[in-house]
Length: 350
Image (cartoon, rainbow, N blue to C red):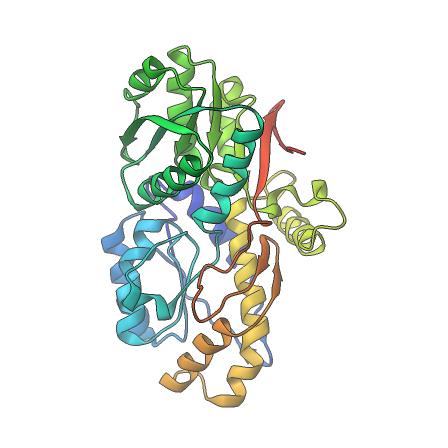
């Protein structure tokens, strides 16, 4: 497991690490040995961790990274070593690397869908984009251009900033463009900073945030400035608010109940939910893989990969997963839930 336990993305990595501490010690009669290393939010360190895993530790599966740029950096190592990678970040990779990479978070297409649908229903005609300069930001921009364009919504201003920036002066340009809504594409505690900048410069339109912002840090740091913000999310963080008919409700409630029993009321976290779902994957695929080969062998790694790809419809805390040989993202459009920050809490938008 390689996670951003320190550095600018530690707000994402730490809760994932907390959930991995609750990982079962044994599955299907096989002892589970989790090796967790910090990549410090640095792709280079993530690569170093991954190389150690496959050469020295001879791991059977890679979990990580917890941010897109680290996941992208270690994907070539998954390919080279033929080790399945369960990414805890939504990551795009070249076609030759797809075979060994599976994503636990929802894809951009699935998560942009409820945002654009809400924009359509509320009469939004123009949108500004304020997002990271990296792969996460660019992937969101590409998807929004496609879906918003199809919905007749025009993106009138695009501004970018780095994860390490301590202020976002670009907010002024967006406020000057005066779009009906602004989509902020950032993550964890870093998602509050650009919105604070928008508020300071007097922006009064709607603000939307992506699923990387569905954490307590957004409200803790953003305070009153993020009241009324719309945030797309997987269902896990709003488990009790889900209708009984939602397929993920029972599993999501189990996740938040166990996580908050360990870490306190209100500690539930979108990213920790992906680590919980990693456990579901392993519990489903490991029994069959153990019948085919012994751990520590190329045949076993291949059996795990094939098991993930063919495990069929599986209920996660974060939605319904159906990976296939042609789709290693797997979620469907029903997965995304739109939330609104209301009195410092995330509330499901009907």
